[in-house]
Length: 308
Ligand SMILES: Nc1nc2c(ncn2[C@@H]2O[C@H](COP(=O)(O)OP(=O)(O)O)[C@@H](O)[C@H]2O)c(=O)[nH]1
Ligand SMILES: [Mg+2]
Image (cartoon, rainbow, N blue to C red; front, side, top):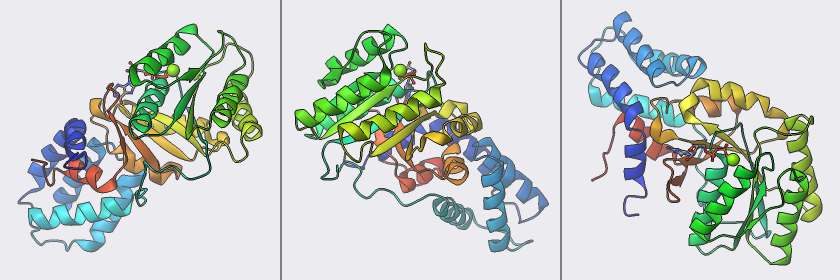
């Protein structure tokens, strides 16, 4: 894409940006005063940066802005942009590159409805489209519909899926998927999991078992354990993520950023969970998945550099 996907970010963050801009209009022309700080703080809250992140940004800006001086719109934009960027980890310089240890194995987890299956389908399709040999594993055996949904994605993006009957042992499906990927000399295996179980086994225990068993199919697997969070849940998604802490996630897939005014939560995720947002879901189509890029994100949030 000519603009590096910026148009998609711009569009996806429209509702969040609307909130920022509403606050922004009230800030312009104000001297740095109590009122100024109040409006700024409220604006950051409105975009759902979350209390801890808002406080951190406010603290930094209080040091950098002189009370009782007017501040130009451009200067304020620059400062805020700098501070928000500083809260995010550096981007993966080449998110589409798969390390040489093949197959790479990724496990996708998260609560029901967060967008796991959709994300597995989108990622599989995009890597396939870039020439990688990909297989998906349907380890959500809780409902027959889950495997059917992934089979639908398999057809849609032309990537094979491994599945067993309903009620099958999820860890066995995951194991088989990786073994198939090894035998067929594939580049990437992505495993979908359940957000809920039909057995009495606690979910975290089952997920832990899946993660452990993969190492026997391919030493070093899984290479990534990606926790899927639904951006429309805002700060609640961060509380949900804490339930998964024992599973050892390596990164976040943040879905439904296109449907929310709570996009500022991206900043809270990194700060509060210590995990990088690696992928962003910006819609329901196969192409609506982007690697996270902090400049594209912050600029779309603050309304800078509108793509042409
Ligand atoms: N707008 C939008 N919808 C999404 C996105 N990701 C998933 N969805 C929708 O969210 C719903 C739940 O997704 P699903 O993948 O079944 O969630 P799972 O239960 O975690 O596997 C479905 O209707 C998806 O189409 C996204 O990035 N944007
Ligand atoms: Mg699912």
